[in-house]
Image (cartoon, rainbow, N blue to C red; front, side):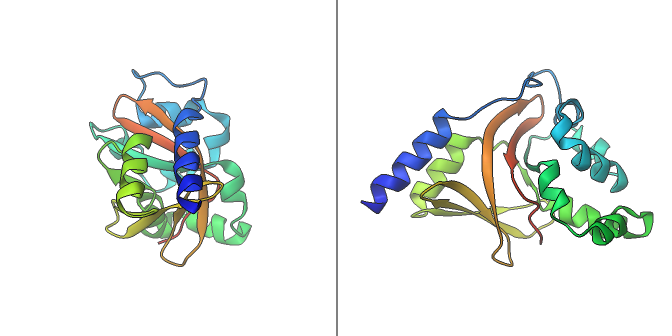
Length: 172
């Protein structure tokens, strides 16, 4: 019965993959992020970490993009500290923990989850691992501390990769 729930949740994720109104294959990952109001904190963080040019590169990249509400869960003093110029490297490490080299669309994540009995490891650009996990109510990313962030939208296609939208910031 649990296997049926796993399969149904993966199929539902694939078929419920919503796109933002900004989705346009001629736009790169940064262009899309800039055009979506719910990514304004992410864009500010990318600018503070000096990662905009990198994510405008050829790629391909897979970005697990946290929405503003996810960043709002971080203590404001901590967030302000991370955005300070002297903490650029630490912020860059957190942000690159949300990026995987290559174009990993929802179908590839589902295939990896099926092959891994509900878990799949993803090596991020900062060199650490994120784990995709299938639960009854959807697909989640689990960071190295065991915290989860739900994948809420998939396959926002960009000219240099794909964006999957997540609810929370994951931490290396």
